[in-house]
Length: 313
Image 1 (cartoon, rainbow, N blue to C red):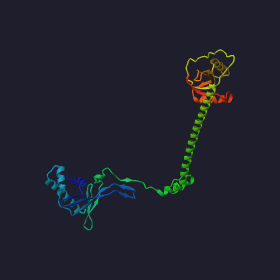
Image 2 (cartoon, rainbow, N blue to C red; image 1 turned 90 degrees about the vertical axis):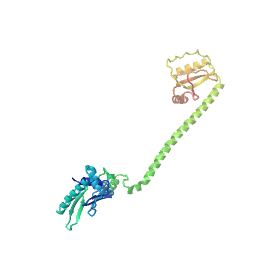
Image 3 (spheres, one colour; image 1 turned 60 degrees about the vertical axis):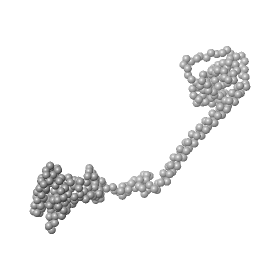
Image 4 (tube, helix red, strand yellow; image 1 turned 45 degrees about the vertical axis):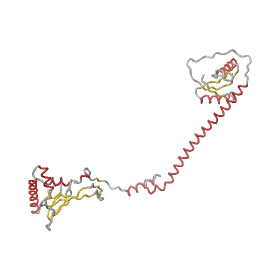
């Protein structure tokens, strides 16, 4: 029977495993290590040593063998004694004794037993699955010099030493960005204020025109008969209207609309308003922007008192 595998199994759980009549294998936990020369990281592990003075039978190894091999305790002790006798005979011949997964033993010239651990197995259960990791050396100085050489050709700060010299550029960029955002915001706000003021002025002008219309009486001699305008079959909503004037007489309103149509306008007569007048339009539009653009054009070229009204027809 080979008792080495039973010694190895016990070393996972115990710090000392004694082989009666031979000696004791001891373990000591070593923390994770870095081999700077080899650039290798080693996980924590149990270091194995041997003490030839601890030979008394503590029962640990014999009981383990009896349980695993399903034999009696006495038989296990006998197997241990037989293995120890073979080990001692080999050592007595000045030969090297190799114990699997533990190490080698041999007597030196001074007659002392020398144990050399050779443990491919890590007996530290907490480090299960961890292996050595090799990492190439980082040549920081060499890379820094290369980066500085690149900086000489391109205005970009790579290295920490030079990056501080360009710190003011960062703040300047932030200032320019904030100034641009602020300028764009001011322009948008100013345009909005101008639109609001324009709308207020237009409303005020329209109110004055309405008051003026309310007080005025439009008299047109020789009124023409009412003109029947063709009605579109498909109804399109055109709520914004550019108004040319308002008439107390529907017949006069129809005549004015006919004149505007003859001049190329899409004129129409609106329903009587609250002042009892019939507004006549230059044209009707689907959006306010279209109506306002047309109103400005008419004010410049045809009628400076044209105004804008909103009503769904």
